[in-house]
Length: 210
Image (cartoon, rainbow, N blue to C red; front, side, top):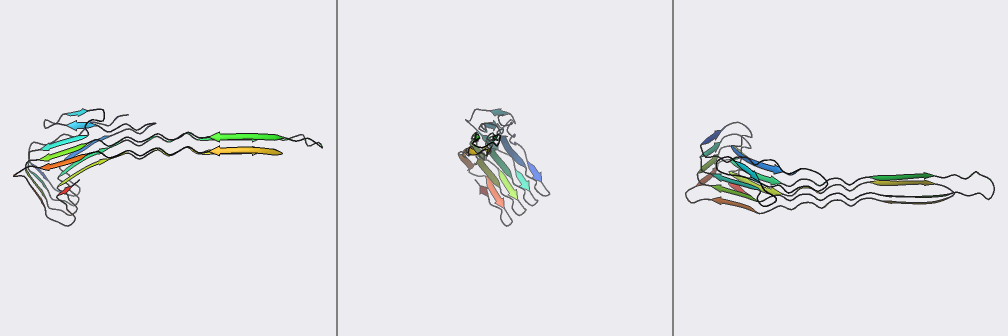
């Protein structure tokens, strides 16, 4: 299935304390796993309404409110779009048991083959856009001001196969399915407008990670 709805953007002040207290999260649209993972695609506007598209837009965040976080691993704005994982290939197996009567001169022939199906490819991550127009302050360690990422889904696992043949003369073959292609990330844009400030106070706390 397609990705879910995008998170809403904020237009007011946020003050978040405690561990992992991200203030604004637009962690949208993880495309569904399946035979062919769908592309993640949603956008949230400043009014808090999210709209899904067909691979055109991933996540859009436009922040005009003051944001403060004080806990460990407390990101100011987190925007992420992840493509769906590819489906696994079907497995296949065959077994042939052919045995002759055992009399002199009697023979038996067994022939078997198994071919597994290839896995589906993964969906691509959508585009990610973040615009900050105000103050973002993080007091804790490992607390980015803005984190924006577009991640392609992982490819599916190829199907397994097995073939077992028994006979005086036995011919057997087995071919596993190919793994699915992984998805691609997409364009990520982060704009910190003139007059806007991002202040991270502790270690491993990057202002903008994209």
